[in-house]
Every structure is written in structure tokens, then in C-alpha cells.
Image (cartoon, rainbow over all chains, first blue to last red):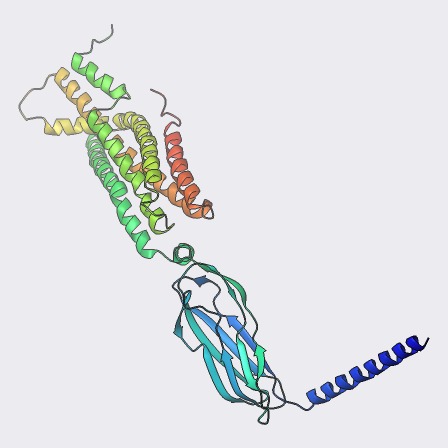
Length: 201
Length: 184
């Protein structure tokens, strides 16, 4: 019974301590500070090898204070697989006021045909002017994307106007020449026949 | 009493009612068949993105098969159309011969009949050949485009090419054996 009562007292103390910690934590949150939400999205419906891919980053400050020294770090596109056409993979904003948002666009060109897992980018920022250390956040992840061959894309979407024109020109001799020869003979003998019937009448 | 035909008239009639073709006609038909069968390769290469070097054996085999079927169709359609044309053109050809006959020179009836028969056969042969080639080429090419780009659009390239080419040439060959084509 001594042991049991000691155990129950220990449990009660632990619970109280936990409650105090939780309360302090909640109090700390309610003091304010910047809180950033990052959205990473790919604007393209189809990702095609050799064609531009637009990656859009939107960062929103939903906190009470301005986020300071906001850094966006994108290391998820290896140079063996993607070439950067426009934009930066490491971007910095000095200050992001509360309720404000910033956007950044990165344009890449896939160099190979493969299935790629587009994961999150990293955001580092200070929650306030007074904060000493940086807070790390992550953007959303677009997920798995498939880079298709240019040939498959062209097959589906290209107008192929020149190809159809070339095909038309190639089929013309096989169709037009026999038709013209046949029609010339038909016309000649039809005229002769009509001339003959007019003469008889 | 039946009228006895001259050997020349017999030859013309035999030629007229025979399905067999001269070497020149055969060469014309198979040559045209080869060309018209090969033209769709350009579509499959440029639009369906079939590599011509990788698929060369397939292309060669299908082109040869389709050429045979199309040449078969040419022969059948020519045979049917030739008889109709020779009936229709008789008056016009007779008129033409009258115009061409040298003035003052008397032509015997037998010679004139021979000339008429020969010219009728020649004109009917020419018109039937050109019409047959034109008609079968149009049907074949339209069918290839329709099958390849509408019906078989979602199939793989290999299946698309095989089916569109063979079905088109097969249909053209079958159509040529239709009413009147098989009758003498």
C-alpha cells in the first residue's frame, strides 16, 4: 500500500507538470510570431522532356508578426535531370509582413524521360525581429510526376500541318493523274457521242 | 447461219473477255500498287512517330502484301468496267473512225469492223485501267486515314499500322469482287 500510494502521488505530480508545460507552451504561442505556409505547385498539365516546366512557390505569412530573413531553398531538382531556364533555386526575402504573401517562379527543362518525385522545398525564417534562431518550414509536395517523351507529346498534340501537306502532295500523282487521263478520254468520247446524236437529229 | 470470225477478231474478242493482262498492264498495276501502299508509311513515320529504320521489315512486308491485294483489286475493277465502257463508247468510236477515214479511199466492211473492234477494245482498256487505278487508290487511302486516325487512334503503333493497312487493302480487294466483277 505504501508503494501504491507513492505511485499514485508520482502519477499526479507527472500530470501536473505536464499540464504546466502545456499551459506554458500555449501561452508562448499566443504571444504571436510569424508563421509561414508554403505552397509548391507545378503549373504544367504535362511534363515533356525538353519542354519548359513552371514550378510556382507561394509563401503566406499567417502569423501575427513579420517574418524576417525568409529563405526558400529548393534542392529537389538534380542537375542531371533538370536544367534551370529561369529563376533561382535559393531565394531570400528580407521581410514578409503578417498577412502578406510572396510568389516565386522557377522554370526548368527536364533532360530525361523518367518518373520523378517532386518533394517539398525548405523555408527558413525568423519568427520576429527579436528571435535568435531560424524556424524551418516545408512547402507542400506536388508528388510523383512523369516526364514523357517529346515524340509522345507531338503524337498527341502537334497539328502536323506540314506532314499532312506532304502526304497530300505524295498522294496527288496516284489519284490526280489517273483521274485526269480517264476524264480526258471520257470527255472526248462524250463530246463525239453528243455531236453524233445532234447530227442524227 | 453463224457468222465466221476472222482470226484477228477472235484475238481481239479473246483479249476482251479474258482476265489475263499484258506484261505492261501487270507492271502498271503492281507498280501503282507498290507506290500507293508505300505512301502511308510517311504518315506513320511523321505523325504516329514510328521509326522507319526499326520498323523497316514490318513496313516492307505490309507494303508487299497490300500491293498484291490492291493490284488484285485493280484487275477486277478494270475487267468489270471495261465491258461497260466498250458498250457505251461504240457510237462515239464509230464516229471517230468515220472522221479519221481517209477521204476517197473505200474501206471494206470487214476492215471497218476489225478497226472498230480493235479501237473499242483499246479505248475501253485505257479508260478502264485509269478509272480502276483512280477508284481503288481513293478508296484505299481514305480507308487508311479513317482507320488509322479515328478508329484505331488509341491502339499501339504496330497494331494501328497492321490493321489499317491490311483492312483497307483487304476491303478494296473484297469490294472489287462485288456484283459483276466475278462474272464474265
